[in-house]
Image (tube, rainbow over all chains, first blue to last red; front, side):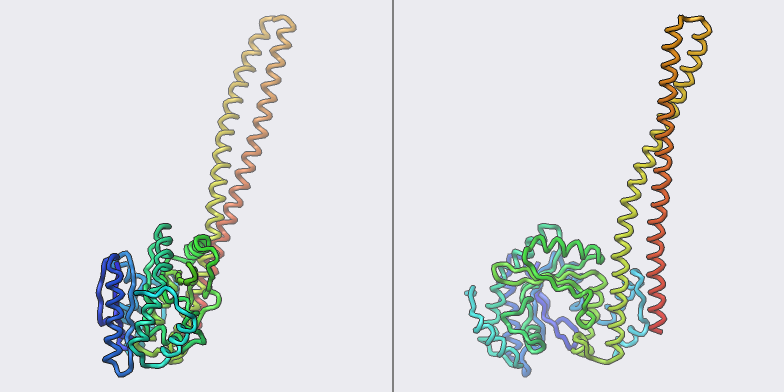
Length: 101
Length: 311
């Protein structure tokens, strides 16, 4: 599957999310360009969002490799903490406290 | 219509214009055409990876904002950029990472390798393999799950806290903590790699030891049967000799008895060798086990030390 993501970096959130069949690659590419052209026309600072096309076996596979788009910093800290504990890598408890800044 | 060929000058001039904040529509369309020209190379790489059972997430198109930032940040021309198209594979651990990278080098002869594990980029650790298909580079990012966890934290904190964190900037405290976490992951993965080698050696030797033990058991049984047969033969011989047999028959029987005794001695010698072999094998197995235990103790000590440093 092909996934089109428009991501607002500063806010850390997805603005547009669309999926396409593998056979719709041209359409996905055109949609991606369309969003960038639109942002460029509207934005005073030009394009300030990441607009990417990703291709993955499933949405779950996409979440695993590109979780940054879907999870907030607290979520990532929590899963890092769990992963670190599991692997034996020591965790920084203060990390979580700072995430809310 | 997608252009298949772009002059280097044309692309580099486009790159120069993209460094500025605002873009013209024609520049965005030209960049899009350039991006799409990597499609076939990208397809070849992803297809090869899927055929060998990997589950990559492909990035068909690097975003314009990422391209422009990279051009501003680094002294690189747009035509030199190697990650216009690419994909990412996250593997379980550093041993799998080593194996996958070795396979990729075989799958894509001439591919270049950027190993950021020993020399991380602002804490970022991973291996990037740049395959080149018909003159088009395609970047394959290979991360372990721990390296990926770190990269996600670094990127997300750059997004929402400070864009410079990812490149070694941002608040000191946050940067130091990310740095320490990266070091911690590196140390853990270094141990993981050594430990995997030790475990593999142990498992290999364990199989050799199992063969030695099995051989010893076979010898024990053979020896036991031979001893029983010899005893029966010895008893039968004693009985026969009581019947005043002719001298040549007595000699023949005594000869056979001597042969049997010698075979028993031979088997006893082999059995002893087998026992010694099994004992040696056992000792070596214990030694290898101890190496593993020492590695584990070393890792725990290191982690305790790290915890102490952080407090």
